[in-house]
Amino acid sequence: MDSPQIVNRLEQKGVKPTANRILVYRLLQDAGQPVNLTEMEERLGTLDKSSIFRVIQLFAKKDVVHSFIDGRGIVNYELCHHTDTCHHGNDHIHFYCETCHQSFCIENIHVPMVTMPSGYSMRDVSFVVKGECPNCAQRHSS
Ligand SMILES: [Zn+2]
Ligand SMILES: [Zn+2]
Ligand SMILES: [Zn+2]
Image (cartoon, rainbow, N blue to C red):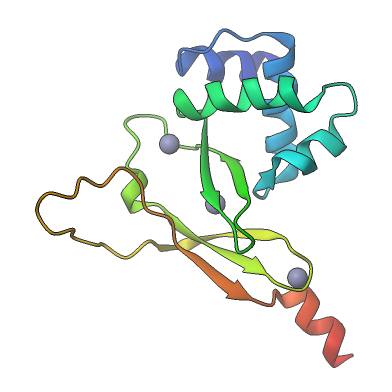
């Protein structure tokens, strides 16, 4: 996706496409897997953490990104690929590798349906499986 498409996507979500916002969007897109704030700061040498945080907070509010807590308790962000209404409760699960500390999207497994007792209103569900990713597992065996 090049800049005009990113601009379109942001406008679709009701976000004014500023230069910083396009930069952050492109980073998430190029990453191809969930990233946390520190990783974003490392990759975007030109933007400081508070600027990135402001962009990402707006993205989360406008459903440009989804967030979830990884196996260390750190918030990870990834792009929302929904075009219409977003059903976060029906989203995919994530895998956290305890060896390389990366998070992966397991797109073909959905978060199991949970029904809460009355009185509890559910806003979001996240489902993280911890363990070792294929890359790290391979490193041990060879
Ligand atoms: Zn979404
Ligand atoms: Zn790993
Ligand atoms: Zn994901």
